[in-house]
Length: 209
Image 1 (tube, rainbow, N blue to C red):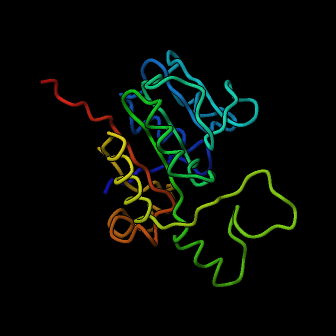
Image 2 (cartoon, rainbow, N blue to C red; image 1 turned 60 degrees about the horizontal axis):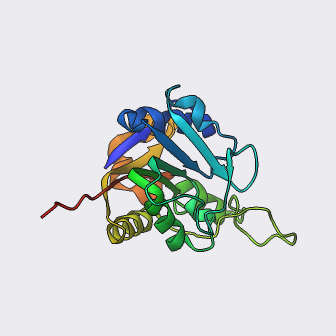
Image 3 (cartoon, helix red, strand yellow; image 1 turned 120 degrees about the horizontal axis):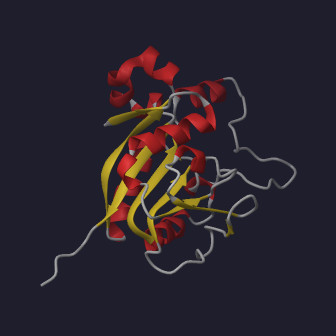
């Protein structure tokens, strides 16, 4: 179990961690699904052909992962979906679309709803971020509530069905958590201590006969 450590807290720290953890993947065309503010681009090499897709601007391309992505099969060398799948109505279809448009690799992160800070919030009756039942219809929210190990099994099994394999996976944590808990405890108890699951998928090439 690999421990991926963000250099700082927040969205930017996560983007830098992902960019630096997989330095050989940023070649040719890169699709960032659910790109939000497109800040991942600033963490990537300048010569990358970056395309950010989301349901609203400032995305380069407007699209919805709940529906079919507007691209041909295997259009992008690497497809990135950071904290995106849990927002979709049909998470199984969403993952199949990522696999369809990726030529070589997919990087996925998924939040662990069972980690310790969420457990403490539930214990004291506090609302979890992007869950709950608001009286006004929200623009966006998490649709799926799952643990680290559920995320592992989901990605492993579904990627295999779509001719991909998980070649690297682990826990993504902030610098403070890693310092306090150390890698052993995070890797030993990821459902409790890992805020985020990271997986690198690679397309399986069938040998020619």
